[in-house]
Amino acid sequence: MRWLLLAALPFLAAGCTAVHDPFLETGAIRPDAPPISTEVSPEFAAAYLPSISGRIESVRQTVRGEFFEQAIVYSNATASAGENVLTVRIGTPSEGVTFLRAPTRRAILAEMRQALPGVAMTIDAAPGQNMHGIYGYATGPLGTSGSCLYAWQFAKRVSPVRETAMGRIGAGNYSAQVRLRFCHPTMPQERIASLMAGMRLKPVTRDTFDMLSYAGGSGYGRSQPAFTRAEPVAIVEVRRPKRRVVEKRAEEPAIIRNAVRVPLPGEATQEKVKVAVVEKPVEEAAVTARVKSALVPLPGE
View 1 (tube, rainbow, N blue to C red):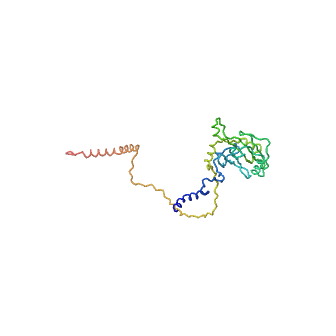
View 2 (cartoon, rainbow, N blue to C red; view 1 turned 135 degrees about the horizontal axis):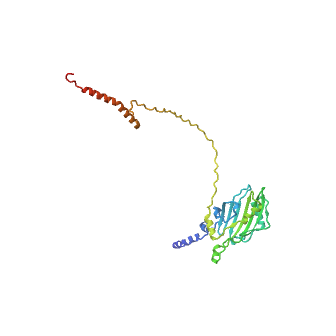
View 3 (cartoon, rainbow, N blue to C red; view 1 turned 30 degrees about the vertical axis):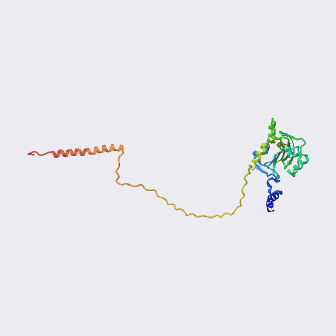
């Protein structure tokens, strides 16, 4: 009997581990958290506006699977709240009806009221057109000389056209939903509407998603001025000992007594002449003395 119990123990242990335990199967659980938005460098922007709109301030993006969304922010020189932002959503028809058709008028009115509260916007009856197809837009006055623009566009295909079947498979079939909210303090309504006409979308392929995934976190931030608290400063007077200035008298030239004077070349000749003239009578006197001393008296003198 004992050996039967020992033989049944492995089967009992196997039955205990066969119970479904979610804590032991965390690797198979699919995360339900939304994708994290990251900031990338402006060079990774999926679209851009003409140069009159200014430069890109920042690019915020969200990438998941075969869908990504970018908020391309431009500078806002107006006092109105909100950002001048070009929003681009890229995906395939499998992501939903968003990438199958253009937005409805009701949806656009709701978006416009949220993006530009308090601005009297008017939808233009004649749609505009750029290199990606037709687009709709609405403009409204801002202040005395400014204006605001809200534009929308559905680009059915933003993937590059490939000639071969394998090339078309690698390129993918991606569509784009584009929104533009832009205000300017001095630009008239006729001119601000041309921003959407100059909007350009970059071609999107499967490699684009990999590039944007690795580019996450490559954004840059402008340095903000550091605010410091002013603190009282104690002024301490430091007394330094005065330096005594000693005046030095100019040294008097040394006087050498009984110094030997060396004659100059011109003076040497004159001295020789004087010596010769002076010494001549002396020689004559010596000769006369010699003559006188040589006379010997003869006998009888």
